[in-house]
Structure formats: structure tokens, C-alpha cells
Image (cartoon, rainbow, N blue to C red; front, side, top):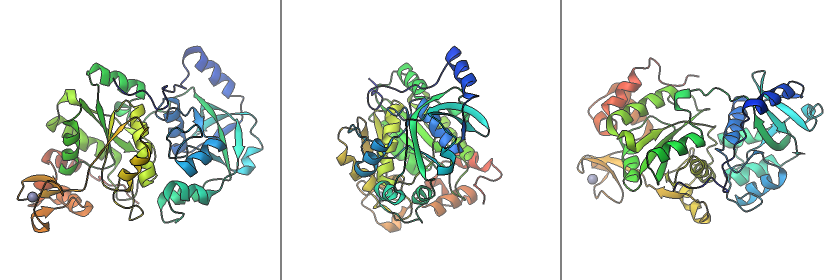
Length: 381
Ligand SMILES: [Zn+2]
């Protein structure tokens, strides 16, 4: 049996048929609140159940409980506030309901239940463990507008996915997993082109469950990262050549990276539970950035969530070892640094772009081929 959605019920706030047309018509008369791409994507995630049990943006009670305890006010594990920030000046024109619009097109209704002030620094410290504005997640929190607006959403126009072919809602993934006869599924989060180390982790995890769900995060990333379409093509090449079709599924998750380390690891696990996963891979420094989090903090935090309802699978750092002849970790290889190659960003990048003697110990040739088909695989300035 696949796990139930977080909190027990898979949220569905997408309107259909007559209801949809009525909502669309009524929305035309509501005050409009234009939102960013990131917020619009989050509304899609709420409405399609990716963020179950949330049915909208958090009110003060849940927000404060999440920030200070890592749980909703009712005690359910939840670690990242899902909030809608609005400038104080903008609030005057909004009544008890608004139409959310993206690029000028209304797509959802928001029932405004609560408007509240909050402490940005406490928000940052609670979630990220720091208020240092060099942390990109903290910087975004410090730049939020004055007020948070809470209430349930109803979507009457789903926004086009950046990659429709790879966009699956929790309802879709759950049907797909069941059709394949999977009762246990491990979720694998990624935001990179896959190297042999990733494949080693994926296949080690897959050994113990029925299927693997490769789930790249698509959205806001940093200059110099691989582009989303490159990451997808590279994973596709790996799947085609090195996985059984009946054992692996890939779909995207459209959300922003918060770089929240341990807190975000719990959040990522909850999202995958909603998508139907029974297990979730947590590697070294999951969702971390720079040296803000100790390397295994994102694993240790799971001790505080025995009631999460998804099993974390912890992996240590891995290397390619020339003497062992493959990918190893500290527990499986007795050799020293002189025999090992790490998968550092620069080394991996060079292996892909320039090849060289060590390249085939780091990355599959089909993956290299897939990346090289793009004229410019990286995100520019
Ligand atoms: Zn070795």
C-alpha cells in the first residue's frame, strides 16, 4: 500500500466543469493580486495536493508553530512556512476575497481569512538556523513584504508546466505507481546532471523497494548551474540506458529551492510522501548551501520526526575508487585518497565538457552525449 497523503487526505483544490467557469466569471469582478512565478507555482502545488494537508496559505497560528517548533499548530510535522506576502499599501484594496493573477491572467481565488504581521528575523532563524543575509533563503525571507495573507485557494486555471511531458500531479503518480504494482517507492530528489555516484545511490535504494521515483526540482537556480532542460535530458539518457522501464519513473517538482538544509529535507520528504513515496533518499548535506549546515544535519533531524510517515534512507558521501573499481563509500572501501576520485562540481563538469582519462569513472558516456547536445548547457548571468 502506498502511504496516505500527509495528514490523511490528499488535497484537491482544482475546480472543474461548471464550478470552474463560475469561479472564472466571479474572479473577473474581484480585486486582483498579481503574484510571482514562485508563488504561482506554490498555488499549483497546494491545489494539486503536493503540499497536503495545506489548502491555502498559512495563518498566523500555523506560521508561528512551524517557525518555532517545526510542526503545524495541530502537531503535524511541517517545517517550511508556505506564506503569501503582500505590501501593506496593497492591502487597502483587498476585501475578503481576491483573484490571484500571474502575468496579468487570473488563475485562482483566494479567500482572505487573515492578514498578519510577522518577524522576518525570527522567521529566518527558525527555519534556516541563521539570519545571515548571505544565505539565499534568508535573503529572500528578509526581502518579503510587510504582511502575510492567509486563506484557502481554489484554482480555476492550471498554469502550463515548464515541461508538460514531465509534469505529474500526486493523483497521477499514485495511479502510475499502482499500475506498476509498486507498494514501496523511493523518492530521489535532484537538481543536477546525474553522475555515477547518483546512480549508485539510486540503485542501492532501489534494491530494497519496488520502484524509484526520480524527481528533479525545476525552478529558480543559480548562475552557472546546469539548465533544467539539460538536467532532464541527462536523466532521460541514464534511464533509457541503465534502468528497467518498469522500475523507474521520472517527473519534475516545480518549486523553489530554499537551501534550508535539515528543515528542507523534512519538507522534501513530506512532498514525496504526498506524491506516493514510501521512502526518500537523504544524502550528505541535503538542500544545504556553503557551510551553513553540518554535513549530516539533514539526516539527524529525522530523529525528531518519528511520526513523519515516510522512511528516510540515509547515504554518506561517496567516491569513485580505482582499486575497488566502482563507486564506494567510507563504509565499503578500505582505500585512501590516492585511489579515490571525488565527484566535486569542477571535476565532474570537466569530465562532461572535456572528457579525459578519469571521465568514465565519473559519468556515463550517454549522459555526456545528452549534455553536449546543448550548445550552452549552463544558466547565464
Ligand atoms: Zn576502494
